Length: 148
Image (cartoon, rainbow, N blue to C red; front, side):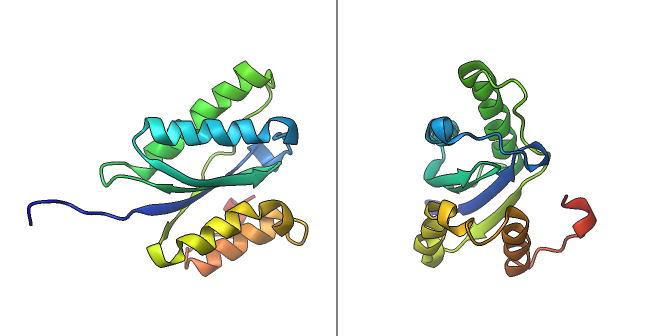
């Protein structure tokens, strides 16, 4: 086979330090745009980005040469610096760790809708409830004492 073809989509989730409501609605969209720019600068494609005051969700397409941990490190470091410099919120930081779930091409539209409707979703569920549900649905083994 002379060429390589991939379809590598990831649903990324990470929260603010101690899930503090740092992300203010007045600059939330700008943060999401900045996160998308980081993904593009790395050679990926940001498909959907949204969140609420204490966490974000990204649906991204990455190349096979990307290491997910490196992408997450650059997303979190770059966006933290942006918040400190542009928003002047120096206490802002992201929680250590993250979740990354692979997404089948047949599920992309559903994941996009899920991410797009975060505000409505969190009228009914806390981040903790949502996160546990995502981990369980994805078959991720975890010890709850390390989640919070």
